Length: 174
Image (tube, rainbow, N blue to C red):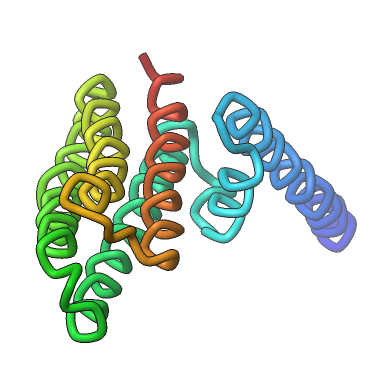
């Protein structure tokens, strides 16, 4: 009898686990469909193991974290460009300051707001992040004939897109 009970328990548990994973995948997919970039959203969330057990707020936190990673990478890239592009130092400095604000203020305030159940403030932090990425790119066109290096342009677009996906997810909590 104990063996029979154990087998029933085991079979129910084994059948339930794939259904839970499928349900979690459905949440991720339906959430991502409501964002401006389904593929970016899906690949980012599915690359994080925490997404399989999270709710919409958790998915927002994961995307805010991804935004922080991209902004941090942008700062590191900007620093690497200082030596090879002395003619861009002014614009690069402006960009670095913008991304430092993202990493030190916008992202932490978004995380704190999501953790505190205040998604409107989290949305504001991600909106600011997208604006900072755009402003970084524009800083190259305002001061002369120098254009943003292609690699930085791609990073700016990546930060902007990720922040906009995070913002769309956060808006679902409003």
